[in-house]
Length: 417
Ligand code: NAD
Image (cartoon, rainbow, N blue to C red; front, side):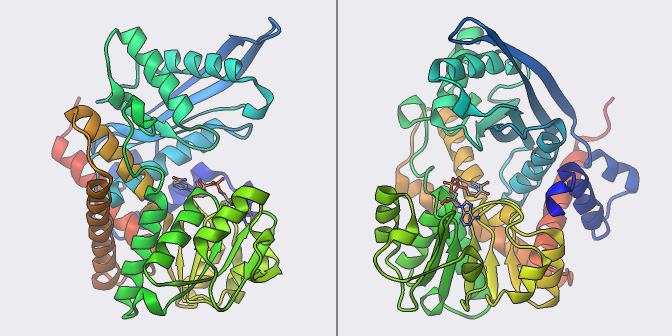
């Protein structure tokens, strides 16, 4: 099963595949298949009852040829060394696709945060931040939120780092609260890049968003905001789902009202209009655009045979299994990969870091304008590579374009030592 695939081996295979289209020697390519450095540590904290708890924690710095390592910190029982290594590699490729001056990193602690009090989570986070201190910094490695972490954890990490370094350094992490140096537009950024990617993809295919019907799987931060922004551009949202099921209305759902209903009752299926169905009904709905915005491996090869959408824009990370990707390529379904479509989050993180360094804060309008430029330029680069170099799909175009950027940065640096 796809879930049992070692994510680090998958990453290495993807890099090998992309390497066949890039002018890079095999021994040089090897460098881009391994992290430069992995910190592995055991955290010990005192629990509220006076006992001591220990946790495995990691930070992988995959590649720093294009700039400081960049990537989130995940709190989850499934966090492992190989998972963190793989995620750090995907970050290196995502920052290179968006062409922002960062490398790739990722960190995590193997724990279920629901089992700990807020005070315990603060001690765990500060202990982790103290371990990270020698290897992070605004010019070294800039962590951000990921699964089960958010503004609160970033504020704790920033505070710990600043106290230990006896300085102020808001650019040491991104995804902070606004009062701690966060950026306007950060919460909407991922949904916004999904909308912009969809707009560019349909424009490439000669269709305006106003003529497009949409199904969105997963109605959380990424999915619900993407749905609302797509609707603002005139697209018709005909189906949405969350973990309780889906709703479908061919006349179009009011994306904002569905969000309000979910906020009240906990599920989109409680929305008054539309026909309730299964998650699979949503994925195979007869729509122009499908936006998977829930979990990884949501679509396998069997399901891919039944997909009716012409375009898939991946809001989630890794929502297609590799086999599903092959099926969809054979069926000429355009898949716009996660490394482009959800790059809005890391791009606005980059804007946050720029603002921290400038000590000058931008309006939301400026953040959104700059994000639009990054995503439309990145789409253009991928689209040219896909067409001019006859690549099998946009995902391969993304890996080829990003690998070339990383290889160029490495080669321009020369050999040392
Ligand atoms: P979230 O927790 O806010 O929302 C996830 C949604 O998916 C929820 O509505 C949940 O009910 C739904 N869901 C879970 N299982 C489902 C299933 N089987 N069928 C249908 N719906 C299901 O999470 P999020 O922040 O929106 O992240 C979603 C995806 O987007 C993840 O893969 C994440 O890595 C990716 N992503 C998010 C961001 C961001 O800034 N939020 C950035 C980059 C990538």
